[in-house]
Amino acid sequence: MDDHFKNHAMKKLDKKFYEAELKRLYIELVKLQNTIRKQGLRVVIIFEGRDAAGKGGTIKRITEALNPRFCKVVALGVPTEREKTQWYFQRYVYHLPAAGELVLFDRSWYNRAGVERVMGYCSDEQYWEFLRSCPNFERMLIRSGIILIKYWFSVSEEEQENRFQDRINDPTKRWKFSDMDVISRTKWVEYSKAKDEMFGYTDTKQSPWFVVESDDKRRARLNCISHLLTMIPYDDEVPEKPVLGDRPQATGYVRTPIGEQTFVPDRYAE
Image (tube, helix red, strand yellow):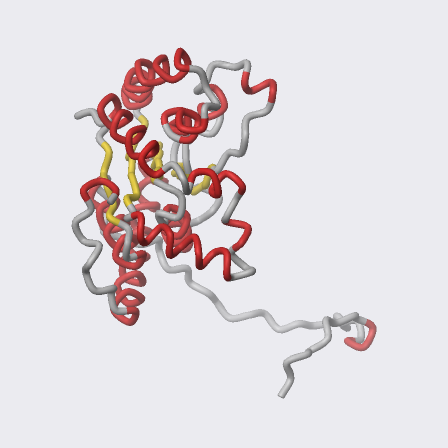
């Protein structure tokens, strides 16, 4: 099993409790974002882990209650031929936050230590240069004032297989299962070795990895969000409630007849 998994046999979290707690945490996330905006903080959160470990679902819950103008999710695809000739970190630097912004990386520069290493998409020289450079790169980000938080989502082999099968059997989820996943599924041990080696170089005191046990998606989401809320001190206040006055009465204007508009058919009328 992955990452010395401890809680794989725990009972799944009750849905009613999960939804109530998630709603409470949403309010705290709004307070956090309000503080980030007011104080001009720059926050980067990295989400890494095996395929189907639950990164995307957690990111979706974190962003659901936040203002998308100041909270951005970055999920980069395969680098272009031009990007392949750039400094490795260059295309990620472009997406770093400005003051008051929060950026969540759904996979990040750690692709080089994971999928690129295991699948042979980078040379040994590029790989070792990354492991040497990455801690210095992250120290540079932190010295510049960026708050950097790194999460590794850990899933057991059995649960990953269950999620793969669920994706295959659900037409709305098949897009999540790529040709790469078919190959990666056969390389469990190789990914374990790559993860352990990556942690050996990049799990530093200044920029540690926080491991989220994710066999239970609900529990993983709540644990991750509640931990995130402890990482950045924030004011216990939500944005001020706007005051709405009375609507002014419409005078002197005749609306276009409603019959001249084209409506979407109401296929679900009773």
